[in-house]
Image (cartoon, rainbow, N blue to C red; front, side):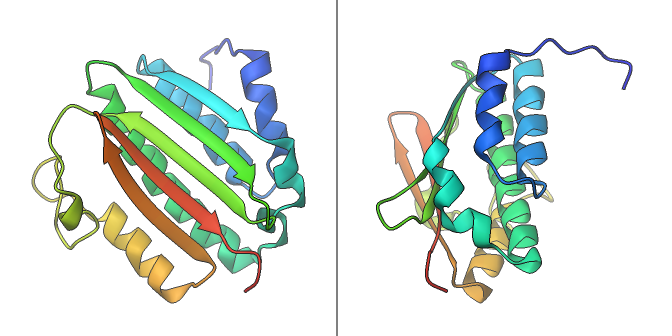
Amino acid sequence: MKEKIIVNQEKYAKFGHLPPNGIKGLCYFKVQEAEKRGINVSINISKRIEKSSIYKLSIKDQRDLGKILGVFLDNAIEASGSSSRKQMGMEFYANKDREFVMILSNTFDNSINKGKIGKEKFTTKGKDRGHGLLLVNHIVSKNKIFEISTKISNGIYVQTLKIKKDY
C-alpha cells in the first residue's frame, strides 16, 4: 500500500460508468497490474452502459460476473505480458437491446487450439493450470444471462461477454 502509482486520469475516469458493485474496482486493479507489467492497455467504456443490463444484476450474478471477468483479465494479462507486443484492450458498451457487452482483447505469442479452450486441464501455461476457463464455462452453463464467445485472429485473442437483458 505504500507504493505510489501515477495514473492517467482520463483513462481511468472511464471506469466511472461502471456500477459501484466491485466490478469497477476489479477492472481498475487489473488494469494497474497490467500496466505495471509493461502492457499497453486501451480502454473504451461507453456511458450508455449506465442503462444496460449490468446495472440490474442480482448479488449472485454480480459475483458470477466478477469471477468471469477475473479469469478473463488474468488470462489476458498473463498472455499479453509474455507476448512480444504486450497489448490489451477493454471495451464495454450497451448494444441496441441495452444488453451489456464486454470485449477483451490481447496479444499472445504461443499457438492456441481454439477447440480445447475451456476444456478440463487444457492450458498453454504449464502443468497444474487450466482451471479458469473451465470455471467460466461452468458458470455460463448454469447462469443463462451470460453468453461468451472467443475469436482468435492475427495474434489477437478476443473474448466477448454479453449479459442478456431478459433473464
